Length: 403
Image 1 (cartoon, rainbow, N blue to C red):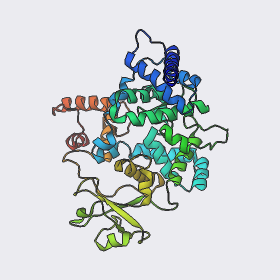
Image 2 (image 1 turned 135 degrees about the vertical axis):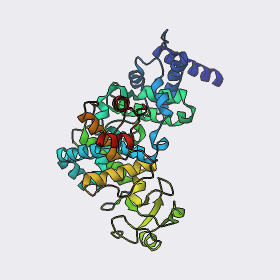
Image 3 (image 1 turned 120 degrees about the vertical axis):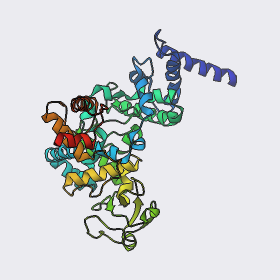
Image 4 (image 1 turned 180 degrees about the horizontal axis):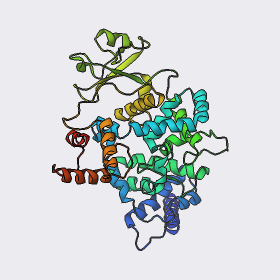
C-alpha cells in the first residue's frame, strides 16, 4: 500500500509537470525535461505553479550565450593593468563625478544610514553596470530564470550554484518585487544597477526610496542602498580606507600575502609613494603584488576584503578602491605597472583616441577602450603611414601622430 501510494504520488507529479510544460516541437527536449523536473525541487521551497509557469513561459531552449560567457571572466584572465584601464580611467571618473552631483543627496543619506563611503558605492555602480548604462543594452541582458536554468542544465561546474540561485530568483518573482519579463541580469544571474545575484538580493535588498518595493532594476536609491547594506553587514569599517599603494623595497616582494601592522611594514622599508606616513599604524594590512614582483605593492586593510564579498577577484576590489579615490579627488596610482615595452598606459590610450578623432579617423567614444572602431581607425592610419597594419595601439603609433 505504501509503495503504491508513493508511485501514484510520483506519477501525479509527473503528469502535472508534463501538463504544465508540453514539449514544443522545436524545443530542446533535454532542457525542457530538466525544467519540468526541477519544479518538484522548487515546490519544496514554496514556489507555486503560477510563479513557475510565469518564470518559464515561452522558454524552450538554453541560452547559448550564457554558456559562452561562462567560459570567459576578465577579472581572472586579463593582465591587471588591462583590466583596470577599462574600468578606472578619465571617462569612468568623469561620469562618477557627474553621478555624485546628480545623486548627491541620496548618496549622502545612504552614507549616513549605513556608514559606507559614497565614493565606494559609486565605484561599485560603475564597475557593475557602467552607472546603469548596461541595463539599456538588450544584448547584454539575459532572462535570469533561463540563464540559471541553462547553467544548471549545461554547465556541471556551476550547476549547484545555478540551482540555488534559480530558487532564489523564483522567490523574488513570487514576492512581487519584479515581473517575470523584468527579471533580467547577467549570464550568471547578477541583477540590476549594482548586479546582485538572487540569493544576495534576498539577504540585502533595501527599499531606500520608500515606495514599499525593493527594486534594484529601476530605482537608483534602492540599488545603491542595497550595496551599502551588503558592505555594512559584512563588516565595513566606517571612516577607514580600503588600503594603500606602497613602494616596495628591494626584495620586499617575498612578503606578498603576509599580514602585519602598518608600522611593521614601514620598518621593513615599505612607504607610500607620496611620502606620507601610514594612517593608523597599528592597523593590520596584507601585502598584495598584483603586477608581479616588479610591480607596485598594495597594503590592503579590512575594507578591501569587505569589497571582495561583492566579487572575489583582487583586481575587482582594487578597481573599486582606485576608482573611488579618483572620484573623491584623492588622485590615482602614482607608480606604473610593469607593462610590456611599447604598450600604452591609460592616459596614452585616451590621447591616441583623441588624436585619431581630431584627424577624422575615429568617431566613437573617447573612453580608452579599443574595440572594433578604434582598431579600424588604427589600421587605416598604419596603412597611410606605411607601418605594419595590425590594428594594435602602440607607443610608436602615438609618437607618429604626435609628430
